[in-house]
Length: 131
View (cartoon, rainbow, N blue to C red):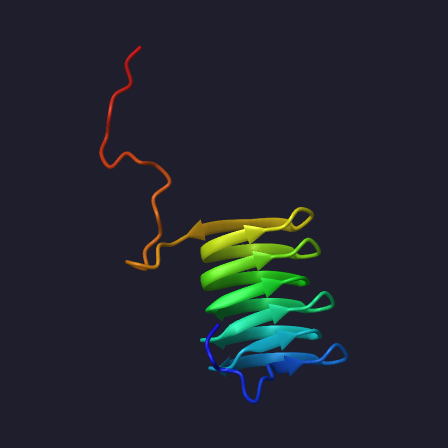
């Protein structure tokens, strides 16, 4: 994790807080309340068990226990805990999923070296199958 925490604290949306709008930051975030909009950070995002995001999220790494509906772009590792619920479009570097997580998403994985989406097939040109 980057050292973007301030005094060991995350920027935080508390459980009793609802936020509508866009957040752009270099700090790490913890979301325990509800966010409707966009969050873009070069740090880590944690969505707590009670946390809900409806919109888009872009970050370096993410740990999700709560709910995300919308688009999710994680440059490095997306870690879905058993209580997580993801719906939408997901672009990630790596994916870790605990048993029990709900993942209903269109998912693409990109390589970090060239920042491009990895092809699904090992074939690079047309080929013919024979029996």
